[in-house]
Structures are given as structure tokens and as C-alpha cells.
Image 1 (cartoon, rainbow, N blue to C red):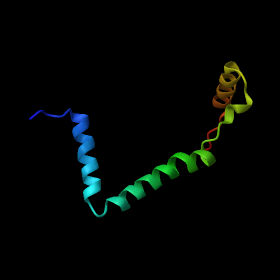
Image 2: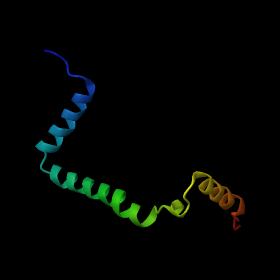
Image 3: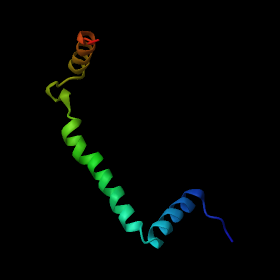
Length: 75
């Protein structure tokens, strides 16, 4: 009997585990829902591209350095 490569064994382990369990569909839907929320919803609202207003790379670099230099830390 020929042994499968490790990536195929890992994939088969998870695919068989999720298809044979009764709780699998609930777990899969929860996982996909969390991934959707983290990747799409949060990116839209919290990870905005602040450097869209700058067209060239030197302008972006200058803005970043100015922000770091002028940053004040409140004790």
C-alpha cells in the first residue's frame, strides 16, 4: 500500500472528520461566519486606507514620518 504525502493526509483527516460528524455543519458554518466577519466587515470599517489622498510613495513616507515624529504620548 502506497503512503500518501502528509498534506493529503491532513486534508483527508479534516474532510472526513467534518463530513462524518453530526456537529460538523454547525462548526463549519460558525467558522465561515467568523471568517466572513473578520475579513470583510471589519476591514470595511476599521482598516481604512488613510494614504489614498497621497499619490506618490515619497508623499506617503513623509506623512508617516511626520505622524511618528509629531505623535504625543499622554501619560
